[in-house]
Image (cartoon, rainbow over all chains, first blue to last red; front, side):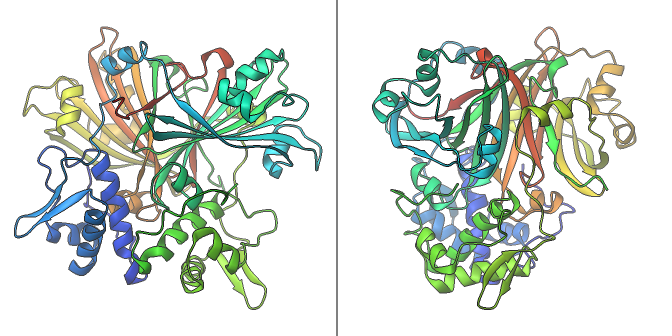
Amino acid sequence: MPRTTDSPSPLGHMPGTSLHRQLFLVLRDEITRGIYAETGALPKEEALCERFGVSRITVRRALSELAALGLVERRHGLGTFVRADAPAGRSSPSLSVIDSLRKTALETDVEVLEVATAVPPADIAQLLLLAPGEQAVHALRLRSIKGTPVILTDAWVPAALGKRVSAAALRKQALYEILMAQGVKFGRVVQEITAQAADPAYAGWLRTEVGAPLLKLVRLMHDPESRPVQYITVYMSPERSRILMDISADTVNTLSAGQLVHDVPRG
Amino acid sequence: MPRTTDSPSPLGHMPGTSLHRQLFLVLRDEITRGIYAETGALPKEEALCERFGVSRITVRRALSELAALGLVERRHGLGTFVRADAPAGRSSPSLSVIDSLRKTALETDVEVLEVATAVPPADIAQLLLLAPGEQAVHALRLRSIKGTPVILTDAWVPAALGKRVSAAALRKQALYEILMAQGVKFGRVVQEITAQAADPAYAGWLRTEVGAPLLKLVRLMHDPESRPVQYITVYMSPERSRILMDISADTVNTLSAGQLVHDVPRG
């Protein structure tokens, strides 16, 4: 539901040659969301010029990039159309989708990209209550479904708990299963959901574009005594993945169902 | 924690003149996430060339754009540094942050951008069980904290329930409060969390860049008889907003705490 009413153009301060890249990212996102699925037709070039406040040349460059990726085809004199083999729009978040999910288990293939003992970044070390310079076990895994990468998982476990965490073990079991087999019990989980722009490494693993939005989920897992046992970050492309929840109205916007938090100076 | 090991460069197929824009989006995202907060120094130009697989000219253009936005300053012979007045990194998702949130209420100012009766997009009409061509009440609101926009809310309510929904009413009450005052009761809520690239309108309202990632939350709210009463989409910039949850380990990855769903052909 793109709108142009009353919106100031935020493009003004950008150098001209990069505008087509911004258009490309937005249009690509809209195509994979199924915005143009009904007729298959993208808006006319003039309409795109007006919506983005850019020249015809800029619009044409963005459309050429989409065509080069195989997402659209340009029909002479007719306009630009989403290709029939472009990724389809996904099902809406309805009760029936939720109910059908209860029956399907998540079956993914795991590739272990890295298992190493290392000093974690300062913020993660602090959350895991590690001493300065103290090492932890780091595991980087990529999960795929039928060859399509869907989840990149970046996990840190305190060294004392991570002794049995190896690439061979992670190919057979989930990290929490390895920890549980050692006697670790799980209690409260603090979960944060946010988004970030894909850097080259993540874009490569998740097969998306550098700069494209990624959905990011961070979990700090504790044992029943509230000691941190695992810090895990999950990256997914919104082109293929999303988070679905079935909640009651009285828990919406609470800390069990997800509270919106804004980091804004309160003056 | 950017990594370059084993990552194929996805930049290869992009026209050269737009590469700096992709760097710009990723670096801007990292600066606002506080990745460089410890020393304030960005990586050297050579390191950025290597990480993104681009030329020195491209790196310099991206850094110039960041400087033009006031996010970094380039010190001759020393490198590029995050400016002291750039947005600060936010607190980590810890138990203490969660506990302090219980005490703070969300106080926002609301601006009503649009209230109108209209035919909703086909997917929303279907979810609200409307007949083809049937109208609904559409409300678009922007919530701010101390003048900083944080939440854009796009809501649809079936016309029969939306009679008292007006701009004046929405300035005084939340939409669900107006509906409850009419006797509407709430039951199950299907919630979807995803991310998308900001188009010009949303980037303008939420004061971010076109193409920058937005966090997107969709809620389909039902009454106790499972009839849909409200479809609401919430857009936030991850620079300022995130979703925090406090859950128990045994509900992680369930439909009450958020199940990861992948739309991949299972072939």
